[in-house]
Image 1: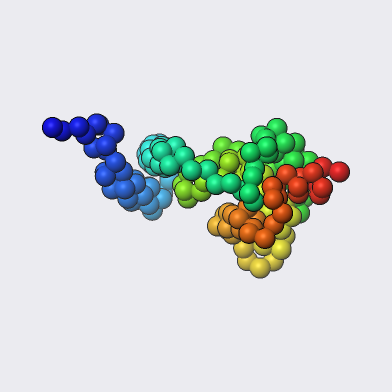
Image 2: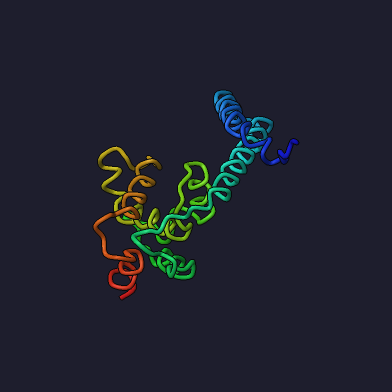
Length: 171
């Protein structure tokens, strides 16, 4: 008796689809950009992100950030990022929440989105000048890795993100 659902049949092909889409994205980036190649790039990127989002939803294994982040709300994250005075002279978040979610999906990062977004922007806000001085200013990988490191801090107080907000940012 065959009990495979269409979803189960699709699972093994997902990695092949991501590899194929990655190749198509690289192909689009290797030619001069025009309207047609921009449309193709957008379609391939959207399909790739959909697969990544599917994996994220399927895994549904949101990490507990510094022991507990369940009480850190989107409203708090928005209030925090709105007040950021960035080292580069700008104000507010450098990346939108949607951009942070895309980064999370592409890199299989499993934190609550509002936590990752606020810390990603906080790292940029506080350290972009130093990152630029050391040749890392334009490196998204640097900011992502720093945010993940901040969120994964093993010797931090419980609920680090709320403590940091309440005792450092908010006053």
